[in-house]
Length: 306
Image 1 (cartoon, rainbow, N blue to C red):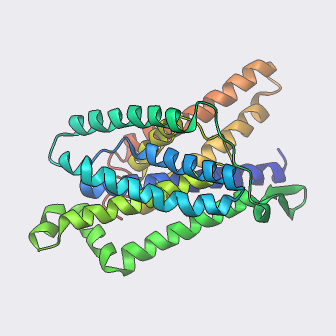
Image 2: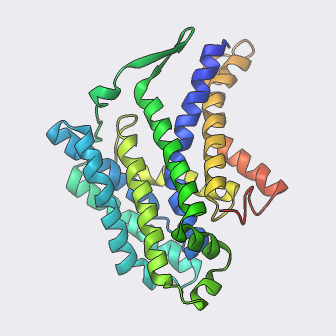
């Protein structure tokens, strides 16, 4: 494997990782601080993708789709929190899982009715179309580099929010001493609402930027939420830095697996077997990492650290 191909797979993994981080960051805050298992979080990603895709298809403007999709998903997230989720805070986790899973089924069917059964594909904006020459033989899509930049910017923004602001102080305190925060007079209901709004914003952003890279279709949220749950367990429940590190690690492992396995086994086994092994490694790499982390550090890599 030449260095250009290796570097390209690292960038692909980084792009996949930061995209996954946008979903996992909101989910880990909700799970770690609110104590609420929201399997429906992936539906918010799907909603962001569909809204952005529909508007971009009708108007021809990706930027307009992005500008409408993100606040629309925030509103949807707040409506769900006030009408459904807050009624489940004091129920056990099984009730939360069953309720949010039923919402997945509801929103999947609603998406079929509203947007149809055929997948959408968003064209990349003209400003970010094409590829840029990095070095040697490596040309990399500008849009994917922009996605990496957005992920890094969001990670820095979340660090500043949690480390330098009053809301961040409450988030840090709530991640480890939730009951004490309420006893000190903090309006826990408003704190939970702010956390849900932040999580919905990140999910809507993730959905909107995914569209130009993959088909927007019914059920796309389920695969995302499964990987997001794996990531927050690896990184540590409630930890944003853990979600970032785990997301990037999982993304790079999956990307390299698709390339390294054919390179290592192409002279040993036939092409169909190489293809099978490559797909198998890519699809199971996240779970292998999860198992290894649970054996060594069951609480997650950054448990207790926002």
